[in-house]
Amino acid sequence: MTAARSPLFHWLALVRAPGIGPATALRLLARFGDPEPLFAAGRGGWAEAGLPAALQEGLARPDAAGIERDLEWLSGDDRHLLTWNDARYPPLLREIAQPPVALFCRGNPAALSARQLAIVGARASTPQGAETARDFAAELARCGLAVTSGLAQGIDGAAHRGALDAGGTTVAVCGTGLDRVFPARHRELAHEIAAQGALVSEFPTGTPPLADHFPRRNRIISGLSLGVLVVEAAPRSGSLITARLALEQGREVFAIPGSIHSPMSRGPHALLRQGAKLTESVPDILEELAAQLGEHFQPPARDDVLRGALDPQRQRVLEAVGFEPTAFDHLVERLDMPVDALSAALLTLELDGRIATAAGGAYQRLAP
Image (cartoon, rainbow, N blue to C red):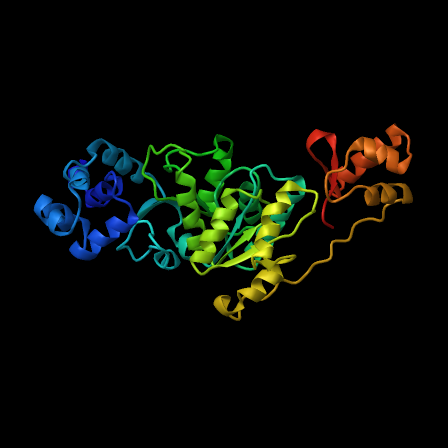
């Protein structure tokens, strides 16, 4: 089947038209109703619609080779194009300023309309931050919420993993075409997300990971979601852009506080000073979203995890390890223990999931 015969041809031509962003595309659709009569209108109709001559050229000469690549990708299993006129287009996303005119989706399109909570944060996350993101995502998934993030390293990847491991739904919003995975190390994770949720992008096939694509991606992350939870973030980061967009879209913003000594806590702390909801547990989120979630979304029951009692020496070591990274040399000085005994105690605590190694050979206590 050639591109010219496909009913999706004109939608893909509109998506690929250079210089025509979401606002212009939606204005043209409001006038012409559908891409096919839009393209049939020609230069005269486009001029009457107020489209500048420079933008008319992109409509007059559709990228046929690119459209063929899109159609080839869409012919695969579980691949979809959700256009503005498609009933499957997520309703929450329609409400934002400049929503995408179409979404490429791999996986289950219904996942995009599920009630969801975005979890975002630093790529260079701490072990504690990654564990927090996984735990929150898993608990939210068990409550019946989908977890949305951006497939990046660090907090994003941990959030997707937590939802998957809990058997829940997760949505990854990508800043590239869906024919590639960025970062490449998340290729297997992306396959799992497609099988248990959805990958989504407004960018056609072949689109590389350009820097200006990720702020555009972030507006979709927040636009799909009832709220955004920021776990860790530097003072200037994409996560804070997502939080700002969420506020502009009328979404809730949640932030998890951290150590005053950690640079990754500065972003969440800045959000808290600006009025974000201080979040220590999933019930904090569900309470804030109660009116939107309905009565059947209840705070999860808290299962106390019983661990074996520590002997006095290991308990002393655990108490000496801070929730911020603590250098091994500082622990030696603090505890006045033989190095081999301290190393053995730290290894046992790490295997038991009570502490984790951090950058530079430091140790960090994990939440109980």
